[in-house]
Image (cartoon, rainbow, N blue to C red; front, side, top):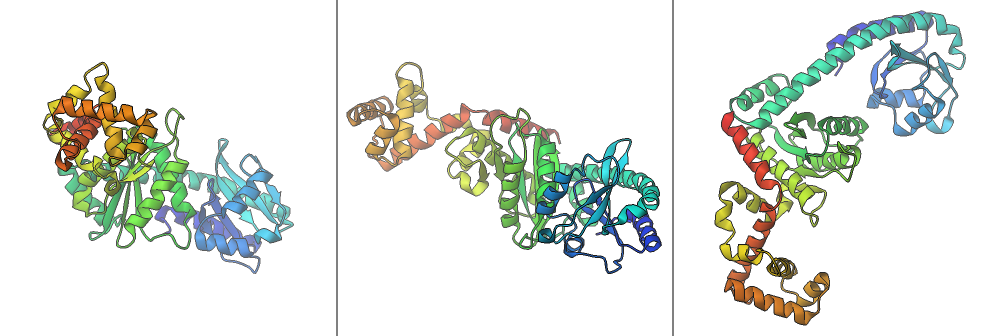
Length: 409
């Protein structure tokens, strides 16, 4: 879609192209096509590809950057590259007080003869592109605010649904999936990763709408569409993991992905994604990109932690964790139960002799009064140990903070 305030840029480019009888294209600083003129038989394979995809292919961007277009202060001639489908062309950086805004492109080996007339147009384009950038930034701010209101819940969520649908940002019947990064990741880094991923695109990319926002201190992404929403969300979540950076630049990014649902379910989907991201960050056995459905037993346990944590951790389990050697009993029991009762696997993981494992398990039975050969007793112990592990993490504080926010909305 050509944005209304791009019309002035289009008019300048069309006028320049008609005057010099050469095709003209204008990209932003990231290589995204803003406008292009009609062609005069001078187009090459690359120009056609850019007009169709709206951006420079990565292989071409790498080539152009190696020549120094991003740091050039004035016009620069670009040698042709048949293997890239690129004829020789002239690049005119568009700058505003030194800040790079984009580029004007002419396909011509001898385009230096147009430098004066193109230079005058570049000055006018700088003003128009600066205005466009400001309007784009303002619209993006409003979209992010609407998405944040939708996800937070309360009265603002219902209003946000209407506004998002009225503005054509989502469809009333769309399914949505929410993606959330861990709290250590800068929300702006998440938004940038999403912009980069969606601009890369690809022919097999699902047809979805993607909107980024910040909810509290977390970067969130709303993926909306009629088909393949979950596939698109999984792809975008991986893009966030690979491309986003943490505030402290230490360690990898963990990402949570909700189930698919309707717009009216957005606050609940946000909670699913937040908990999945938190579990991915807190529990090393889980993947760095974790969907709500793959949280397994941790999902319902985290929800139970919000409701009544004291009811799901029997006192007998607390006794296993109360100082001295009893702390090792809790860990021993959890490793044994995680291994589905496989004593060989458990003793290997614990790095103890199997006889020592049997002794410790007997101590667990003695202290709790439960029989580890009884399925119900084993389930009670296993769930209680997992809940204790969750309660020792920051998840309860996360959930309390979210509940307090909803109550105040």
